[in-house]
Amino acid sequence: MSVPAAKVSSPASTTSSFSGLMTAPLEFLRRYASWSWLSIPSLLLAWILVATQFESYILPQPWEVLDEAWNEMLFPTQETVMDDDGNIVEIPEEERVTTWRLLSHGELVAAVQHFFRGEIWPHVGWSLLEEVGGFGAAIVFSLIFGFLAGFFKGFREYIVPLNGLFMAIPPIAWAPLMVIIFGLGYTTIVIVIFISAVNPMILTIMEGVLQIQGQEVRAARILGARRWQLLLYVYLPASLPFVTAALRIGFSQAWRALVAAEMIGASVGLGYMVQTAGEVGNSRLVLLGIAMIGLFSYIFERMLFRPIEKRYEVWRLT
Amino acid sequence: MSHIDRVGGEDLVIDSVNFSYGGKLSIFLNLNLNVKPGEFLSIIGPSGCGKTTLLNLLSGFYQPEQGSVRLRGQPIAPEDTHLGYVFQQPTLFPWLSAIENVEFGLRMIGIPSDARRERALKYFHLVGLKGFEDFLVLRLSGGMQQRVSLARSLAMEPTLLLMDEPFGALDAITRETMNDELLRIWDELGQTVLFITHDIDEAVYLSDRIVVCGRPPHGIYKIMENELPRPRSGPNTRTKDLFWQYKKQLIEDIAVVTAQSPQSEEEMRELRLAQHAEVLE
Ligand SMILES: Nc1ncnc2c1ncn2[C@@H]1O[C@H](COP(=O)(O)OP(=O)(O)OP(=O)(O)O)[C@@H](O)[C@H]1O
Ligand SMILES: [Mg+2]
Image (cartoon, rainbow over all chains, first blue to last red; front, side):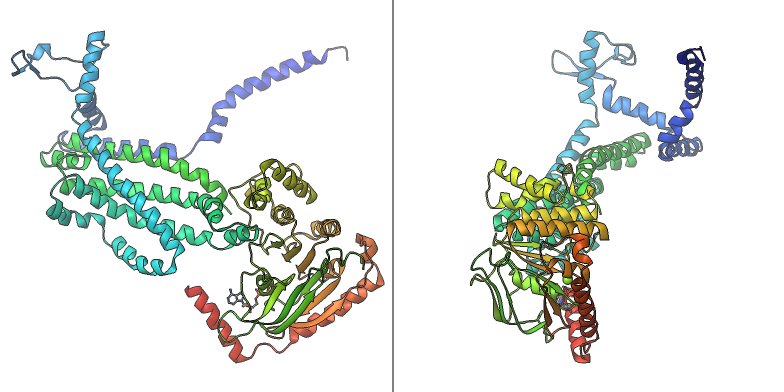
């Protein structure tokens, strides 16, 4: 009885924190572990295993692709230089800049310059520009036509069959025709992207507007909302969930169509890069291109559009 | 009774109204009903008898094919601010918080934000939701949502309040509490209330008159005066002999209208066609 309570409890608490330490990794696993952790490693493993069966120039290993990325994107080894007279001359082998080590200040500047001289950047840049053009136009059109179709029954009846028709045709099928009309290049690609993105976006927005029209509008009218107030205080906020959903769907449709279209109707861009690299048998560059395509898609879809969509989904539940 | 006539000179008049949702099937044929100012009128009847349709006519969402609906001699539009309507479902605005939902109507009619918040809070607390002001409405229970919806209508301080089974989704206990709250609010504000319910107890407990409606197009089967003294209070009122007498009477009446000639073959076909056409739209 005379033993202070603190002394009794302290060994006990030591034990519990000790056992806590032992179970911590298990606890951590129980809480956070997910089978999704295995998906990408297993894909890599399969790649490595399959690649062992092939020559490196046919199916390179993942690290060889990384090496290619290093060369293409970051620090392409500079092989030529312009002399004082404006002639291109080859740099002797032993003087070429190798950046696979800590850099001095001068080398850092050179490295940054090389970084932007990486051969992949024009492809990435053009692809993104085309995406902005085609997807941007699709946003404007689908907002206008989607809302019109939602509000006016006549227009809806008119546009739905057209929509269905365009959705039934894979957008890439339009590419050869566009090449004939507009030639290789920006316009052709933008039009193909536009066709592929605008139709599902119009449908998504139209269906969203149709869903609003019932009860919420009635409730607002009973509470005294006039026409313009309905637009501002009901249709606008109520449309955010499906407008953001349409953006996400449209973006990914456009990106898919973009890559495919570039393989047919472009002279620059990620799709074109993959295509030409394939033709000359540079499988490393092909795989690098594929990885870049996936990466950009992931960045935009998962890190930009999906979170926006999620934000508005909260009050869409039930 | 003293609470009637407190709001002088207002009268809701339904005058020889015919209505159908297109097609041959009449929902109402020559429907007449006068509602006195400040009266609490309940409407009870089998499902599909046209109760919601009646409220849609009274709120101006639909127009009668013949006859007229007048409040204080004027036709009614949904946007009229002296009209309140609590729907069968809560139909709140999910992008707004609970209190912002209650403020919505006040905002539409341009009440400045301070006064708006104050008035919204008053009714929010009145329906017993204190502490839930900033909740997203989808995070509230069904019963709480229905109370937000009620507060939203009350905050407009309408002189005519239409309520379509507002407490249908509530459990018996909450429902009785809400009944008392509603009577208290009604006593304070003195608006005219048209109250649809499936619950006989509720109808008897609340109303001055009870309308029993028959299958379309029979319209009103019977109007029962309710002489139970006010103020009414839970056990006291519910155990009165008169309460049980009315209840018995209503049970019998409802049995009669439920057994009423079911719609003829012809009418049923019309009805199915009409519904089919709507689905196709
Ligand atoms: N929008 C509509 N279009 C066509 N017919 C309708 C429509 N709404 C209701 N009806 C028909 O009108 C009749 C009355 O319907 P109403 O909704 O008024 O019934 P109710 O008495 O409110 O029923 P409940 O108690 O189930 O809510 C029903 O036969 C129904 O099928
Ligand atoms: Mg109904």
